[in-house]
Length: 259
Image (tube, rainbow, N blue to C red; front, side, top):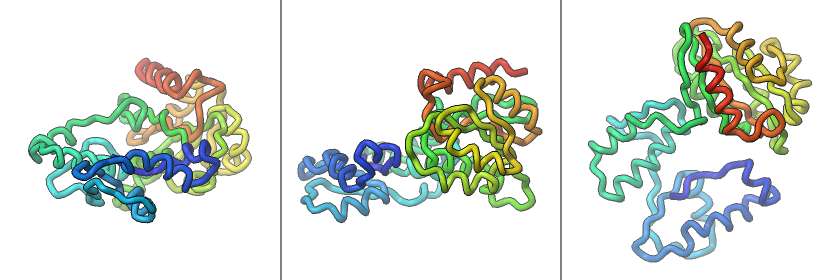
């Protein structure tokens, strides 16, 4: 399965999509006739432009899940992933009835829009693996009231973000924060230092912390029934944490102890 591209990985390739793709093309370019290649829509456009001969049979998943197929986790990006899984399962000969049950029962993976618990009507989501602005944008679009299509709903996401700089462009994320967020709380770090001058000017800015427990406590004070506290950092974890998983585990522990 060849799905999509991740901007943070491009840093390793000096920002060159061509170098990145040539490396990733090893996924399929040595396949033989009769082999199967499942390519997401974004990857497919690059494969078409690739100069090599593709011997494998290529399938491109539908843009949306067919009628009758549903997932339990939020977000268009998760539905996109589900279409890839559906296509793969069908090629393997798995019955649609089994695929439907599997997609519906899948609760996601730890640290990716993971619902930890609900306290007094406030939901807490751990999205610690969102270490790029694109990932945090996807999380906001998945959870924000504004994306439900229902009118007269107020912004309901209290976002905890920030951390260590990875050299990525944060412009697109910064431009949509006011649209989706009720409040933004920052965690200290070299990346946070770069974006704080802009975020601190926004009415939704709710402080900066060098302690995750204090950041969550601040978010709780701001939250009301129907709101969401979302840890989706958009940056690396180094500095305050050992790694992104340590960050997520600490978040889970604090939230689970919340009364």
